[in-house]
Image (cartoon, rainbow over all chains, first blue to last red):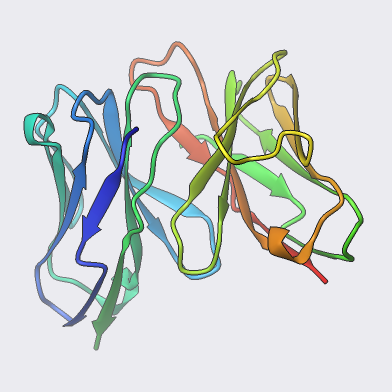
Length: 112
Length: 117
């Protein structure tokens, strides 16, 4: 059964810092992986989707990398802003059509 | 991205009553629907997977007679919490996926906050 671990569990930084959020998963035979953002009491916002054949994906200040063989993905956030404060969730998918399995997330707080 | 709506966004009910939550895919056909729940400060836990026109597949530990899932059309799935108890209070989130896409992706609804008193 797929298990997802995210490190660190929480992170507090001043505005402007570059950040690294880590995700590891036990079953490396994945189809794709998604990163999400969740604001308190809200639903999920999809940030990036990486296919198993890809090494990385970029969207604005966000860059996600995937090392499928080692079961790891990393989300880089450049020049962090207070508006980036949220919980970031990593979720791999084993096969097309199957459900995403979530880690507990990294709760990020960016102070101005 | 594709849009999924949920209704209601929040609901308060008394213990012993039943509550129905609707999940709709607005601009795509959701061949598969997933239901998750999230307790405070916890991650999303998959409850069940349903394919249109078929019975739902429930995850281990989820009571299928308590959490009734119907996926009668490609745009609508419902979750009914029967005989709700305070321990069922949680954040319920649905998501839909569309088969046949080059990159299979799940689209999530905004969630429903259920409080059982």
